[in-house]
Length: 242
Ligand code: HEC
Image (cartoon, rainbow, N blue to C red; front, side, top):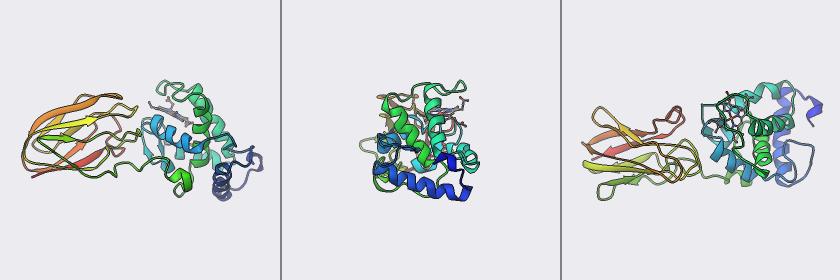
């Protein structure tokens, strides 16, 4: 399929066909192959790659590395097939160019699962459907967090997205301890600001809790992750203190 060099407009259709084909385990000369687990590929991509890379279909918003939709749009338009993208991604995982991306973020079948998911997804308009649509819960869509006994708990998105589990929280005025458990593989912290309070917890990795205590007057505050690119990627929410 990659040798047919279709016109740019045609590629979108080809990609959609590939996705459908891969999920029903047909075809072998394509971006996704019969042994690939695309659902696992998406899950791993979100968890291990999405904090640094934007990929619209995966709902990831990282900015430390290149926007993968943008990075591959031109090569797809130039007629390189999606199977070429698959090869580039797999190679980048094993032998990253540049200094910033660690090697072997996924291993074993994870390499081809991630490469296949990225290959069928980059620069493709629309949303994932079927099993892929439910592979990872959407980020930040949890119930609003409500402080109890002076403690407000707002976990980081456990799937590694640049988000907290909820983007809304409320508390009573007074002394408040803000806790952010982090189950994801990406480092995060939590900070709160408005004119009055500006406080933050430590940056913590998987299994850690970022935590601080401060006095809050009634008002609206923003909570956010202070790590570069995380707030910009959507890791923030509104805390209403009454
Ligand atoms: C810590 C941040 C970080 C993580 C995590 C990360 N990358 Fe990267 N990635 C980068 C950076 C930065 C570059 C650009 C090369 C460089 O300067 O290191 C890059 C480059 C790439 C490229 C080449 C893009 C191009 O323009 O050709 C691909 C493909 C890629 N990454 C895929 C992945 C995949 C897949 C994962 C997960 C397994 C991943 N990255 C995880 C930071 C990251």
